[in-house]
Length: 243
Figure 1 (tube, rainbow, N blue to C red):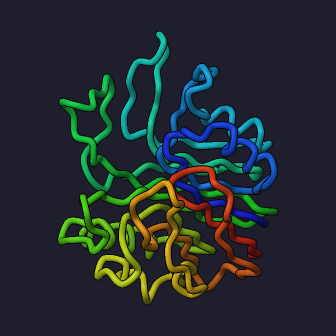
Figure 2 (tube, rainbow, N blue to C red; figure 1 turned 180 degrees about the vertical axis):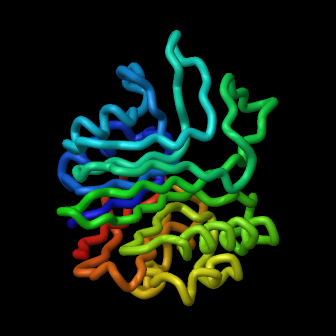
């Protein structure tokens, strides 16, 4: 099975992004900075519907942080998961702030965050897939007391789950940050284990690891790699695994 993790940068690199998902044909995708708009955007960005169609995903879940008006339609923005397996449970847990409709970039909180949790049925076995976009601190990936609180919140949530677990996302945290160390005794951080030095593309000013796939001991890792395809200001992570 294949899982792709990607912060898609709002789908700005529309055609490269869609070509990537057409080529990968992943079984599961965990995405951040997703624009969920029914119908096309007018060739301004790739929408979640377009990714679902070209990737041949049969089920999905959108965990919106906020919504706003776009061309007389409603645009939902946030974290999203897509699956070729049936999704049998869907959960959205806010780690900072609350969902806001009629969102305004100037007047409203832009650092709202949530943890998205789906349970997919893989040949009769439940797989827990969790997706998160981490709290943003300008100019630093070292974290602070707030990121530490949120990572403990996520870790405590995962401790209540039974079965195989995959946690992925752009955490906005460096591997050696105190906040990321929260997962050390709970999950295996594949970005660190496989020696990644940066998960950003050249379009970003950053040059550190902040994108992750973490797994518990009930997930068998066959292969893990970072894609060189330019689809965003972040690189995509690709996990080949079995249960």
